[in-house]
Image (cartoon, rainbow, N blue to C red; front, side, top):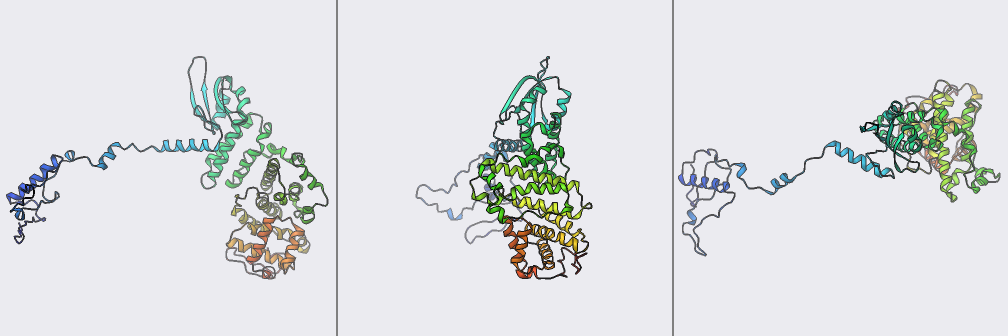
Length: 509
């Protein structure tokens, strides 16, 4: 025991807490533990009475901390603190399944303007069996398993929740499943299509299994109802989800080209356009017609591709001036539907024309896809052009073989157009520099030394909208102005390309 008597205070050796030999110190420790068990600390008795001062106050021992010594208090006897009270009233943590369920419900109510009843989810159907023995079979089936359940229970009576053509939730009782589908199939299929588009947007950055399951079930439902052609009001909605998902996920389309056969007659359906638009298309003195040129055409591209170009020309001559006219909403919707038709036809051409069949045609189709995404999506400026499409175009351009000057004269303008479109779709980086060098070499072989001559060829050989023309000028400035075209042949390509351009026309690509 260490004692300091200078100020009358006593200290304990913390290194030896069990050796408490002083009777006074043992009394202090026992008193401290007693106060803890009583859940209340009594005031320190100093012997004061009013303002009276205790003469022995200076010689009293200072109360030691509770942590010193071997005395351990019972935790059950301690008073409840505010933190302990919060723990006692805290609710259990929610399960992950409940969180996911709430997120899905909020998403469904936010994206779909109808109220889901009976546990109905836009991507599912709720079936209740109402057979004679009064047994109730209630289960939520996915849209794929629903198609199988329909085949197995076609003659039974079911109670079904679905959607009508206005998107309202309806409930049909005591009807066969086939009869009920006649009344609510169109609205339900539209809802499933919308869910598939949501899953497509989610799968663009992750897994696409949900999109595939919805599209697979949707194709089964349409197949059992006579095909997609039976419901013309759903053509464009289904085609957009099918086309974009198949393109992004490198998956074969769930609907064949025969399902979209009515799209080929879309060009003749100009009666929904406004009168001013029809006059502008037929007027020979139209300002737009005098300034614009059609897309480059060659005889080696095939009849089907040229027919797609013919459909694109209908929009090419009038589309850039949409902002100058108060177009109606029906006119804008028609343009968007027209764009979807062209996109899907180009998508089918890619599957019919693999890269080995005709390299020039394959590259041209890829360039047209970039072109349609860049120009005809003016009403949807948030749409992004995938960089992978520009990378695929670069590989396709490298595979093109030019035999002699005659073929060069035929394809030079087409190569220039494809290289500029590919470069306009690229962000800053090695791929954009690749297109800059590629375009500069083509321009040098065509003797295009200034921007005026280069721009004149673009206007003469191809159609250019306002935003695309601005991209052309940005591409020109990134290449260094006049040096961009006058760089000459024999330029060593960037390390990202890993290739070199030769002086001969036959093998420089």
